[in-house]
Length: 179
Image (cartoon, rainbow, N blue to C red; front, top):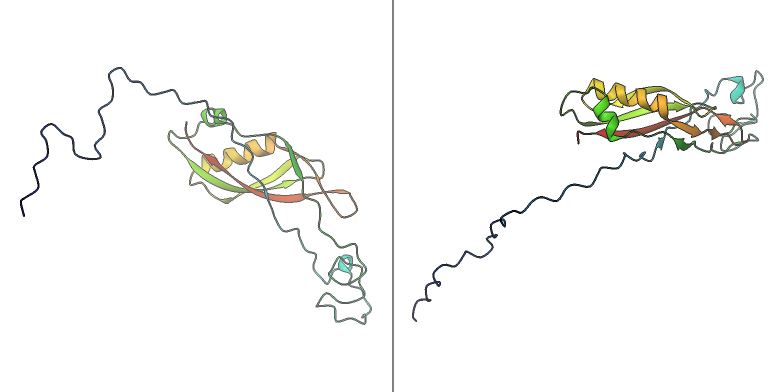
């Protein structure tokens, strides 16, 4: 059997890319929109201690076991005569973090990271008690995130089962990166 013929002269190997054309320029990048508010993760509402009178405990013993959600109390447990139900979470109505915040924040050059925060949405819709739950690795990023969230963010407050505004704790994360 004869050997295969040699490749023709002046051919490029398969898969090679052509050189860039003369005068080619990179198209400008579109402007970056502001960071959208990530969907908040509701924190578990605080649970009352079962021995408190507000939780249905009384000074006289009842007929129920009292530990498995049974008993005669007026609490919001699974079994009983209380209101029960879950609160309606707050709804974000104003406030955002933007790329301009990064430039104005005085963060170290190249600092980037994602910070997980928790904060209280008060019954008036304002925000306070912001705290870092998982650091970005930069204290400046963590602190600036909480400062801006408390300063700018507003919510339609959470409501209890009776429709009354209540305090509510949310968790969310933000990613900061230089542009």
